[in-house]
Length: 234
Image 1: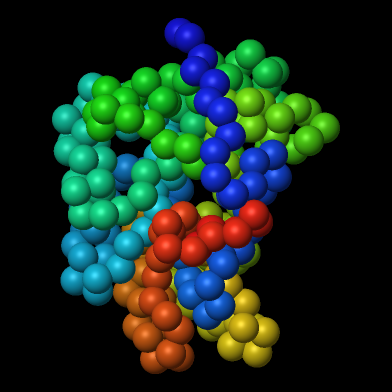
Image 2: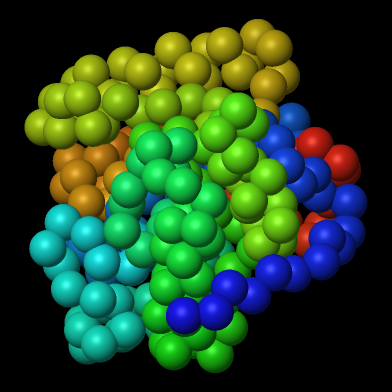
């Protein structure tokens, strides 16, 4: 499989993780590891709220089958795009990108590119590394830059992976993060997993409700064409 490097375009940073949004008091909803059995219901919730999100797609992990040859995953990915959500890469295999060599990293990214191109006719310029492991010293960030990817990290971790059934703990983390955001005028780039039902369904409903109550400006994708600078793009 060939690797298709792209040139750097625009003002959004390459070669270092993006952790925050540009617009104050906004929240970017992002979901890793999908699509999953929860994703269609999550899309219904987002549609009802008029909210947009970014989905970091894995090509074939957790035994779900390849996304481009498994009809239910192909359909839900097409639906994401049709409803105005952003598609980004979370690698093909969900391997730790700091623990594999450069060639393996590049081929893994290329395999996910090809799968998404088979479904959508194009592939993304944004990625989030599994386990958030992609560093300078291993050459991972350099590889992603060479391949034309913006690397997305996060400002706030929902913690849904630590205790996937504990809605109370997740909601408390959200409240703490928003309290800090209210005080500092910060921009929130949130990480969740649509493979975790309590997070994808219950926590998303909670976030959309509490964000509205606090007067924040709603939810956005990771990259919005409306405003961006050299460091952040929500």
